[in-house]
Length: 359
Figure 1 (spheres, one colour):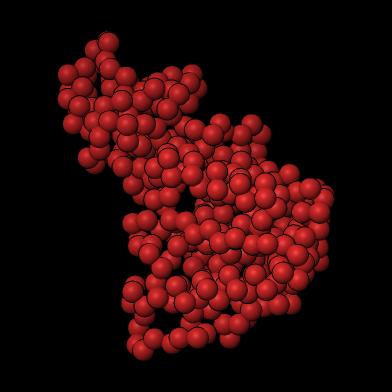
Figure 2 (figure 1 turned 90 degrees about the horizontal axis):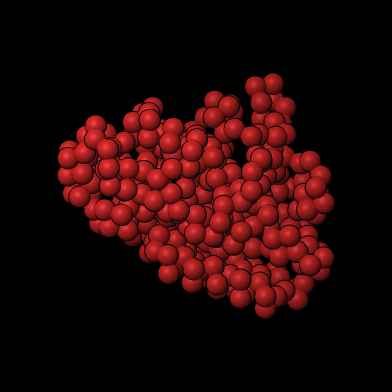
């Protein structure tokens, strides 16, 4: 079993900005036990910016450059904390910092995957964080909830565990929702407010679950302070909120397509949408209603259905200008060129909200 464990800032740190040993030490012992059982664990950890603030307090409102400086300062402290913590359990750790760009290019995506697999084979615990000291809005994941889900797809994990301060997703009656198969059926249960001191909230965790389900990976939101939470989840015990649906995992190439950032959009008609989703066909120019953005041959684009929801994404055989010309030339005609081959197309298993992943 391969497990990705994500811990947020409010799990890692107290409100004063210092390490929350009461939660981290039990989690470290559980990770040690899981490894002794032959399970592979990857840790995705927030907290660098919070630790940076504890040692350096910028004057006035924080600028982007100041936040990046805080991340650079705090990342050293964060890894020092994990190094000392896991040394007590004879577990070596390695730092891996990622940005969106690392998953966009196929070669860099494979390099990241190979690095993580090499660390796991060597018995090293990878500790992953977003590279906030260099990341800008254009190349950020947004928060580590999304990062953990994408790492789960990157390494073909069996389970992504999102540890937080809450017991899971709460229903309208205040009771934990134990199992979710469709994100759109529960999204109305949460608001868009952020967790104190963090960058995400429950809505962010639902979007992360949507991504995990697209890969075919199970995800669980559970309380970090729950006794033996990781060991019990590994045993199959029902804790927190589990996001899972029928269907196998995506192949390696299609996991990359689902994770990478898009360069443009293709709006398609209802007939093309049925051909892609029900019959597994390729996308032809005749089914395209509009082309948004400028992109070249072989770049990744979003496919948007007639309801304006993101249907999927794929690699184009033509540039944006060539597609526009083909759409105009073959409108209502047979023999229109193939724009995206079905082998280079991934259809989302979970409905995507409008503009869910901006290009």
